[in-house]
Image (cartoon, rainbow, N blue to C red):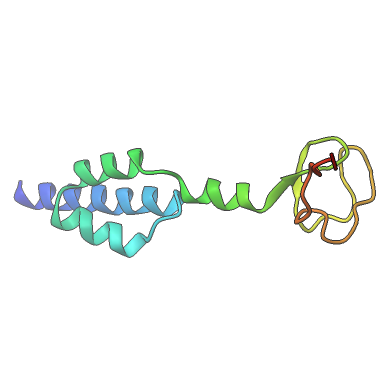
Length: 100
């Protein structure tokens, strides 16, 4: 009976580490934390922590200056409106202040 409990504990710890890895966290660190503390508590911590993979994708995109759709910063042509984009378009300011 104790063997089954230990195996289930290890399985849940590995599952929590996989869940953390899918959210952009370190697999090994969360595996060790879930083994030391509790897989249930670490699963809750992973669930309430922000998803780092979504933030990485958001930072690699910017709105097109012509149609405002989100496109890759490295794009040379907008896939939505087919507008040609100048080199460095994503680093330029969108709204220029008007002279008084």
